[in-house]
Length: 120
Image (tube, rainbow, N blue to C red; front, side):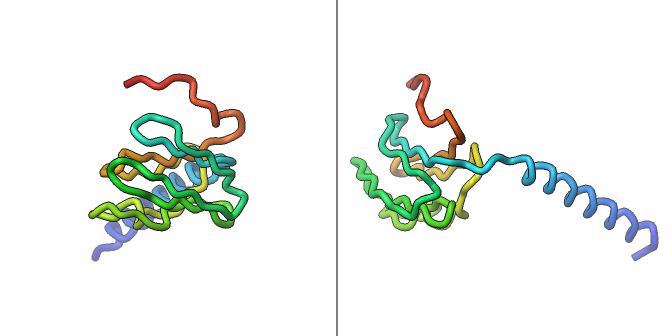
């Protein structure tokens, strides 16, 4: 590898780290996890409490857990288990989706927990 190639790689890594820091530092810590199924409100969990809720749908179930300020799907009976394998979320706007069960877990901040409108 030439010296100029090494310099370009270092510049690209520094730029990527700067972009990552900019977006992660600016993200607001969420307060509540709102769970909807097929656009219909099902549950609301404060993420600062250690709690869980079982969401039953006509397609199956999901267990959504809040623990130490983070939210994750602990268990589900869908085939692909993508929602269970998803990383824990805690920042406003982050979501976990279970497509087979049409479930969405969204992190909201202060004053955002109420849904304005459902279009469908």
